[in-house]
Image (cartoon, rainbow, N blue to C red; front, top):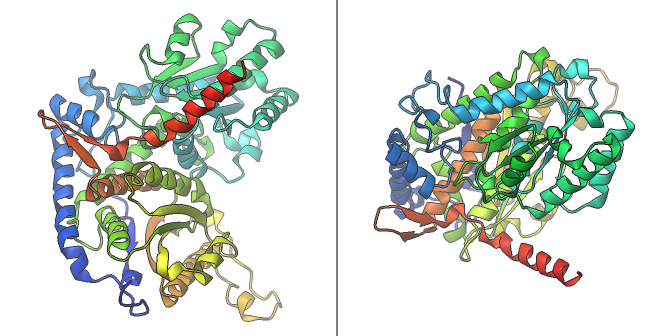
Length: 514
C-alpha cells in the first residue's frame, strides 16, 4: 500500500492569526464535526451496499457517478466491490467498460497513430488534461516518437470557439504529413456540445477534402466518447457512418466527475510510454489503484481525525466560510506539473459547491510562478480578512528528473548560496513551506495536502480525493434538497444548471443571424 496523502493543518490554529480567524478545536468537534461524522457513515454504507444491484442503482441515481463512474447497471460484473477496502483486492479487473478502453487504446497504438487529439469542454476536457499532463514528460510532444515509445503526441481543442486553434492545428498536421496518422476523440455525453461539435464538423470536412475521401468515410479517424443511446447525436451518427470506436459516458456521470470513466481513461491509456515499462493496461490499472487508495483514505480514520484528507478539508472550507467569514479559497499547486489538476479542482468546486448563494470564490494558481502576481495581491491586500489558502505539493520526485543545483558557482549572496547543492525538488518544497509560513505570519489561514509523489496512481488518488471532498462539502452545506418516498434524493452537488443559460443565449443569437 502506498503512503497516505498527508494533510498539514497547523497554520489554521497558528497563534500568529487574529483570534477571530484562528480555528478552534471545538469548532471541528461541535455541530460541524457531528454532521461530518454522519456523512462519513452514510458514504460507507453506500459503498458497501454497492455490492448489490439495488445498491448500485441507488449510487447512480443519488450520487451521479462520483463514486463509481465506470458502473454499467446492466452488467452484473461491471463492478467488483467485496474487496473495495482490501489493499490487495482488484477493483474492476473484469469490468467490460474498462477492458474496452484498454482494447481501443491498444488498437490506436497498433495503427502507429502519430497524433491524438482530444475534443471536449469542461469535464470532458479537464479530466483528461489533469490525468495526462501530470503523468507524462513536460516535453512529451517534442520528443521523437522513439523516446515516446508508442505514445502519440496529444493535443486538446474543442474547448472553446477559437478559430485559430482549430485551423492552426489542422494546417500543422497537414504540413507535417501526419494528418492521415491522427486520431480524434470527440467527447460529448449529449453529442451536441456546441464548442466540441463545431470543431468536429470542421475537422471532418478538412479530412475529407485533404485526403480526397467522402465525408462518410472519415469515421475511421474518430473515436466517439458519448452517451450510448439515441439521445446522443454522435451515437446516431455512428449508426450511419461508424467511427473507429465508440465508448460510453456512463449514465449519471457528470463531466467533472468523469475522469475514471472512458472520458479520462482512454487518453491516459493511449499515452503509455513503453520505455518506462508502461502499457495501456498498466496505466489504467494504476489509476484504479489510486481510487482504492483514496477510498481507504476516506474511511481508514474517523472524519474527526486531523489526518483524514477528505473530511477535514471539507470541514475547513465550511468553517472558514460560515464561522470565519472567508470569501475566497485559493488553491496553490506547488508542482507545476499538477497545473491542470488544480484547474479540474477549480471546476469541481465551482460547479458543485457554489449554489444557492453558498461557496467561496475559488481560484487555482501555480506556485511559485504566480508569487509575483496573484499571490502578491493576496498577501499585500485583504488576504487575512477574506482568504483560505490550500497548498498542494509533492513529497518526492524521481532522481532521474530532479537535477542538483551545482555548488561553487562563485555567485555571492544568500539567495544563491542557500540553494547550491540541493535538488530542485528540495528547493521547490522549501519555497512552498516558506510561502505557508509567510502566509501564517500575515494572518492568512492556510493548510496543505501533500502527495507522496507524482505518478498515475497518486494523481488519480488526489483527483478522486478532491471529488470526495466536494461530495462531502455539498452534504455539509445541505445541497441535498429533495428526498423521495423510495429513499433516494436529489443532491444538487452533482448538477450544473448554471451553464445552460449561455448555451441558450448563444443559440438564439445564431438563429437571429440566419
